[in-house]
Image (cartoon, rainbow, N blue to C red):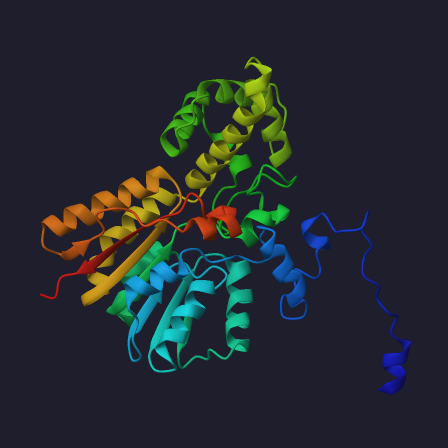
Length: 353
């Protein structure tokens, strides 16, 4: 055995240009938070999210509302990196159980392994690979739940990984699927729809003011037989669509239109509104009497749906109380984590009867 180990060639880490790694895959220290805790702390202190990680938002606000007690049973409908789940598990003090759902086959394995290594075994945590639209089926088997959390945002480890195609800032395939093994990618979706449908998608999903100009430019490219299958190419076409804007306005307008266009496509390819409708419909039946639900939203379309559902069900007497106003992360949290700025939290408490 000793000779075999000696004969194995030593693998050197791939070198990167400059003094600091720039690309997602080169940031080897950030991908190993347990080993390089000091590096992780420095990155977070600068207001950035370490590569491959996700910083949970509104943790204190969520825990304050959910009022988790040992012995309770809860559900994290959007497991993600597991940060919220970990803090909720701590509140159980080893007595109780949390179920975590996630549709992403890549991240769910990493998160499950991470939480198991942190001491959360199968006695307190069950992870299920499913879309949170299937809340009703999960509740039939494992519910009802004393508390439920849903964080509707895309996790940082998905956004930052260029292979997933979520960010216009990094070159990668124009994919945008939460489960890259199922459904239609954003690039293929653009081949299926008309110019009018694309414009309406951007208006409906992200209130894009330049939807018609962007749709015309992108679809003209496709009609000419050219590919729009990378994040960079879509960004370039958005820049082209907005070229007539005054130069002093153009840079910021392009940035915001890129954000909104990518958001609109992501919502479409993942059927996010349909999923949210299904979740909100199933939510009251999944909660135990007096059970508490908290939902984090990240754009106005999501927030409107949550607000409307909560208010209607309160009128019907299904919820005893709902949030009158949204809860936002503190200024300090937003300074430490800029991705928290658009977050809105709403909550509901199921009636005891």
